[in-house]
Length: 232
Image (cartoon, rainbow, N blue to C red; front, side, top):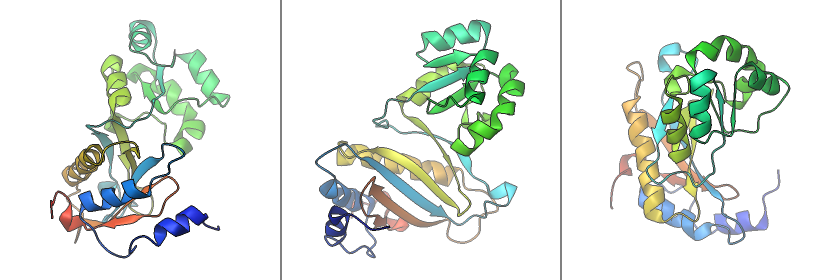
């Protein structure tokens, strides 16, 4: 796929093979950002794990202190008092069997799906729709819960899910190009600290193998994992 002229021009402004401290890398990213729209800033972190093995599959959530800069749309599968609480907490879609029927029909106008435990037999049947989109509620990510008010507040307030893909990469948006360098840095460091906390006992060798940050349309800037948190 051909790269845009802006992409090629930005790639020529720095050495793409050089490893940077995290603050320096984000400074470069800020200097390359589009002036036309507020691009997302993404971090891709490759870990020394084998995602094919259950004891090395990493999945969870991290609270980004600076938020995501995104208006997060939430769907909640719940009934009765839990459904009322979800509506009061600001969920965009709330319901039981009727919401499940809408989703089964292809409605996926949301970024996070939350379910109360009693709804999981129904929600579990929606794997064909929710699974490929990474939207299936899971206790490990706090999206299967009896406290829907808390969960909605967390996800709307900057909590994001992470998981390793089949190549052992974790891909997480850490903000927008309009964020200050300090805000992006706080989010990146929160993410890397969480991944260290979630390190499986079975992981061998150097745990964090590679870190790259980029904007939606821009080239990747490499970070030296040893310099995360360094002011050098």
